[in-house]
Image (tube, rainbow, N blue to C red; front, side, top):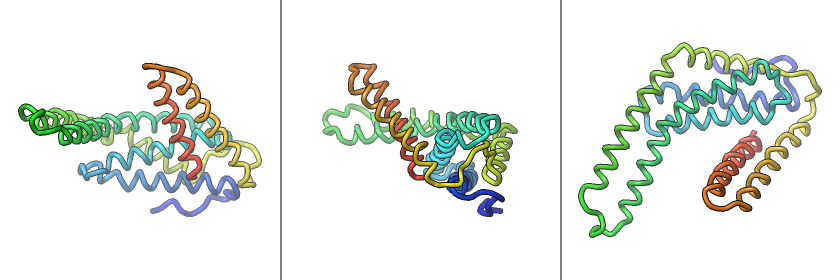
Length: 213
């Protein structure tokens, strides 16, 4: 069964946040069987759903009971890390293959493309086995149960959240964080600049997810 039916008292800002949790919990559940059969793109889509859920739990943390929402966010971080290993191998394989294809034929000595495909294909398959192992575990099923319970009846904190305008300051906070991290990156150089740009990129994603919600 779906999770669309609203909980009593969920209106205003709560209704929007709950809708986001429901939407992404259902997205994760929809990708679950596709990941298990190794359908193309399923790991990426499931990872994005997990990221959006973690972002919502963090951005809208003042609205939620941290004793329940933070353990859920940590467990989502765990499965995101497991999915990330396979996704990283997929991305690296595609990028290196594209770079090789762009080179003049006379510069590509030997079966370079095949070696890349073999090495990173094996790395992706090993990572996929770890994904399946995680998804067969009691820890994963407990995570799914907790997520669906939180989407069906979010653990609201005390406070007035009837007005949807109450969400705007929470989103603006993420935007300000992105601006600060970007400026820090632009002021840096070398490896430190690269690291800070990566931090700014992550902050920008979180701000985008918050705005989507």
